Length: 141
Image (cartoon, rainbow, N blue to C red; front, side, top):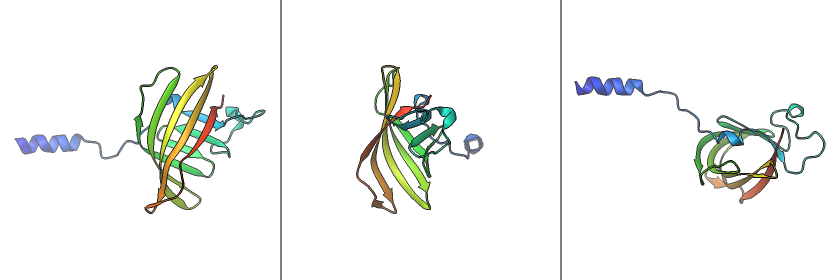
């Protein structure tokens, strides 16, 4: 009887892993802060355009690279104005693959959404590739 219950339980577990996601408040198209003209209009931006970041369920896309979100953990309770999440990313682009750990911090200031992305570590083949960096993006509307 126990073997039958165990077999049913194992069969009920999905075989496909579900990708982690960043909160919906971070989904969308973002441009490095201080855009001019129509550089940040959603309808004027191609996915992955230079200077842009696009966040969709399970994926963060930059110019010539794309990252699958392996895990995402809030670092504070989200509210209407702020969200902070640490994410483990599996990235590839320009013939390379690497892992990145990044902090995404969203603030709403004077009605404008800004997200600061701090790359905490970047590794490929067990080697650290860069020091921490922070880039600030503004939401494209």
